[in-house]
Image 1 (cartoon, one colour):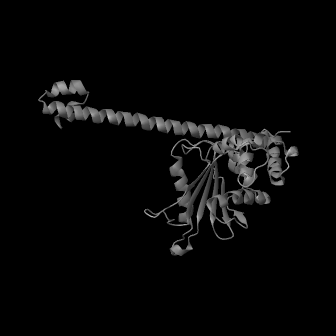
Image 2 (cartoon, rainbow, N blue to C red):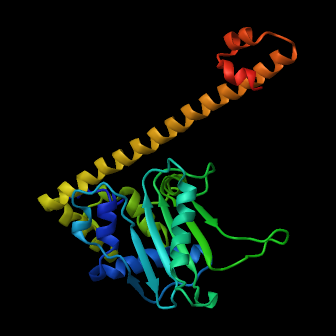
Image 3 (cartoon, rainbow, N blue to C red):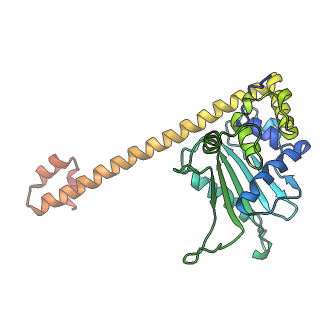
Length: 285
């Protein structure tokens, strides 16, 4: 029976991949992605911000999905992002930078830094092309060499991946990253009992727990409301910025018109009437 639980929901995603008791799922997800960027797979991972049910109760705040550290000391972030509106690129950079800065306690030298790998799984398109994998790196120009292996952002587009998978006529369980990308894309329609892959079956059983728990299902549903609230805030901020930008542009044009009219010898009174600027502003031009 299908669980009806969307694994891209932040509560569901964190419960599936953020529990130390299911750390094998987290390791499997991360290790399916690291080779895409030419990075070594992790032999083990510790979850720095494990799933805690109370974090989600009555909360509309953004909760960081996964912050991990591997046996080599690398910091690995994994974010499941449903919407790509707003300045997401800056948020991606900010999240990476915060973790990198926190590696350096006061008094320590820069040699303590370790790579920070920030993985973003995107349900909506961010980059306007058909590629489902984008690697954001720091490169040197000219030459094109890598400036530092410490910086890496990996963006994975679920929609683009699924469309290319369908176009290729693929069916069944994918290998590598496709195992989890296809799971995240169609997970709510999968049946735990009919799932042949052991790890995906384990993840579906966790989703089934959410579905069968009245309290957890209520939290799961509330996260969609929280998501809608955040999106409305983004749209309101964008609309405000557009309105302020238009107003500023109109004022700039009015000032330019006023200057031109003054150069032509038009009276101040007529300029005030024509441009809508106040008398003091026109006289000061």
